[in-house]
Image (cartoon, rainbow, N blue to C red; front, top):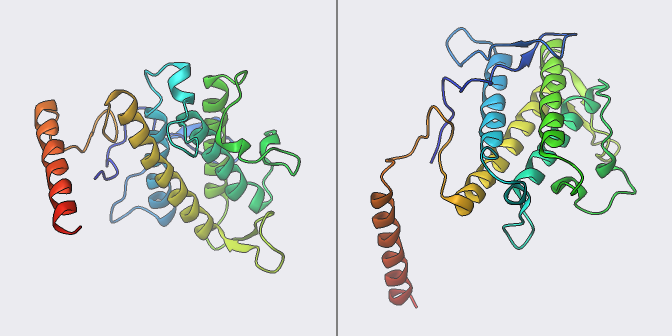
Length: 228
């Protein structure tokens, strides 16, 4: 199990001052003096960074490969979470982001937000995600957490939520998908851990992990026999 790194790796400080989405400022770690906005942003940025790290060092093929029966793939996850941020933290609060999200329009094919087309580059998708960070962070900086917005795709009469609710929802979604990315990356090349500066693993010894895995396999088989 991994926990957020209290000192995110270089590149984490991407929170943006109001009205200046391209000017990053440092992430403020949780403390007795941090604000609720700081705390929310810290955990959101930690999940963002962990997710993008899982793409590093992989080929174009591997970041797009469907590795589950439902087609889950690393670059598609990044495209999806970028779309989620722009939807919940920009559109919902009437803050234009200027991105063409054709894959979530009514005419789009099913699940189009969960994979990248062959002509879309890694830089295209990652760039979209980083721009989404800047726009979403600008919303968090500009509006009080009790600001009420309307989610465009929720049913009328049940479409309101606060910014606090929206940020928590985005954090939960990003963390969930970062967990998916953890597993996909380990299946691809054995790489595991939370961040370059804090892998949060029990040990880095491959022999220990092999023995541990073999033990769990034996326990699973023994349990299956006992409880058959």
